[in-house]
Amino acid sequence: MAAPTYTAYGDSRSGNCYKVQLVLAHCGIAHRWEEVDVLSGRTRSPEFLARNPNGKVPVLERADGATLFESNAIIAYLGRDSALWPQDPWQQAQVLQWQNFEQYSHEPYIAVARFLKHFLGLPAECAAEFAAKQEGGHRALAVMESWLQERDWFVGGALSLADISLYAYTHVADQGGFDLAAYPAVRAWVGRVAAQPGHVPMRDPAPPQVPG
Image 1 (cartoon, one colour):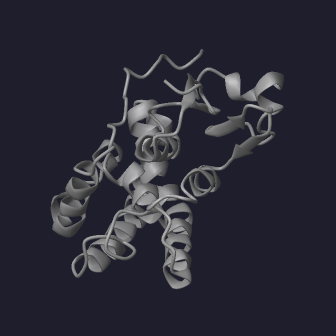
Image 2 (tube, rainbow, N blue to C red; image 1 turned 30 degrees about the vertical axis):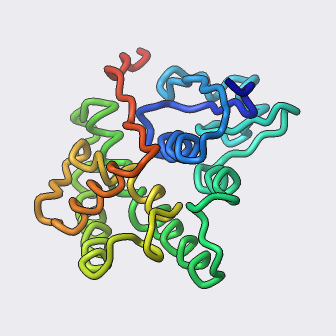
């Protein structure tokens, strides 16, 4: 087995971290995964802040100690020479288009609702915030449904980084209260992504207790 080229720090339950796991798997990149519980406070430690001053996962660390953070930046770097990154400049721009959509119109609703419900157990003080996320999440899913009704993939004719960015939180959207039954094209696309060679499922250990 090849020696690890990178160390990836992340919480396996996080969709943003799962993006990195997917690209590492699809590209067959040697790495070491270090699990970081986002509820433990570790990401605010001086040691971790030296790797990412923003105090979040995922983080990719090279053997020379250089680090890269923000999930879509990490997967762009890892997937740059693979089939996940199209060669056509227009399609490259489309990948970025959908990654920006994911970060600004999708993740703030679907991922946050999932965090409140699945990670925190939806405490009473979060109920109003959770409810407020539903409209935006369904709006994002409707955009995806419209696009996928006429095509199998978000960009071109094959799996790309755009699909991976959007799949990470969409395939577990039900954990944030979003029923995909109303989005048959999205559900079919989720199945296609999961059926791709090299695909790995999200690891979802029992959520840890929130520190008191």
